[in-house]
Length: 91
Image (cartoon, rainbow, N blue to C red; front, side, top):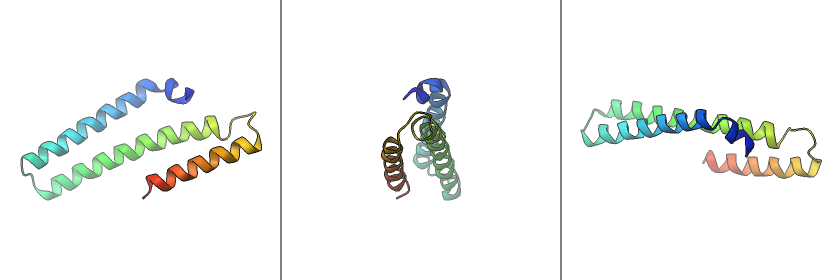
């Protein structure tokens, strides 16, 4: 997965932000914060995870699906894998 190695620092920064947001959500729940504040924190976590997914997915598509030199069979195989992953992610 060369595309994740190229942007490893950026991806790890995103993951650390997600960890911070999840920790803030846990704290809000422990401190019996208002449900609106909790919902806002959940939305922030979800948005951050979706952003991470989109970034890694874009890199994967560019490197493994539309890259020069792939056979039609290899492209179809990768397309099938991406479709299955998206179905799983969107459940």
